[in-house]
Length: 68
Image (tube, rainbow, N blue to C red; front, side, top):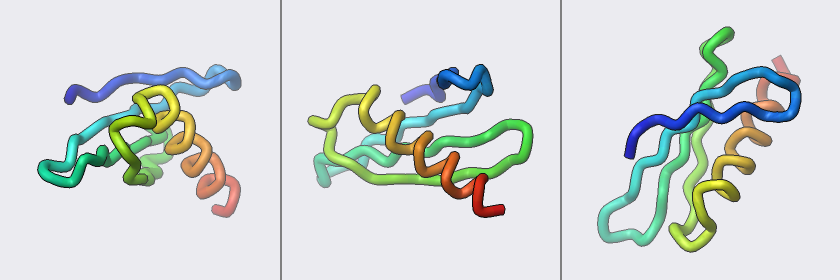
């Protein structure tokens, strides 16, 4: 799958990439902050949908960025 930009409420843009895991029925979702280069990944079920997985990955990214 191609990287998909996602713009959260704050107006700050993140890059969200989806990679289907063969044979596992899951998707690896990576969210990147292009300004800092901070990157996080999550793995979730395909059934969760792109939007739900993207929100979760962005939430994790924001959490990690706040800890820095």
